[in-house]
Length: 113
Picture 1 (spheres, one colour):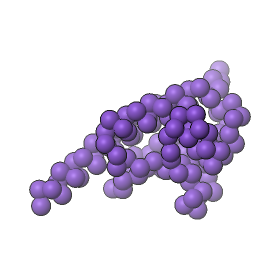
Picture 2 (cartoon, rainbow, N blue to C red):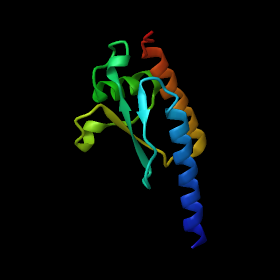
Picture 3 (cartoon, helix red, strand yellow):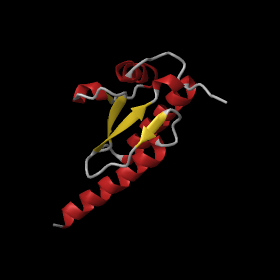
Picture 4 (spheres, rainbow, N blue to C red):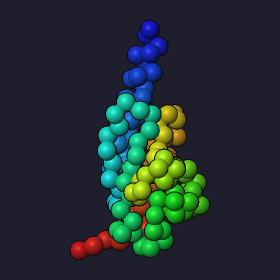
């Protein structure tokens, strides 16, 4: 059962990476995952430049501008502005994807004083 421990350790590491990277993105609220291979991230659409008004538009524009695919929360019955990110990919791919999500958020974020 050593392989189970290795898989759990890998997912724990990837979950931590996901949490740490995405919580630095302006306009996003990240909650630590609780045993799954994915995380639901809240989008505060009011903090952005109007390029998107909901989770579906956010995910579509993220794909167009940064070539990063995440699923809108509405696909899972959510009525809130959320997106779902899976962190089952290799760490180097996750790091690049999260850097792109960060760039996307910073580009569209409106700084409020």
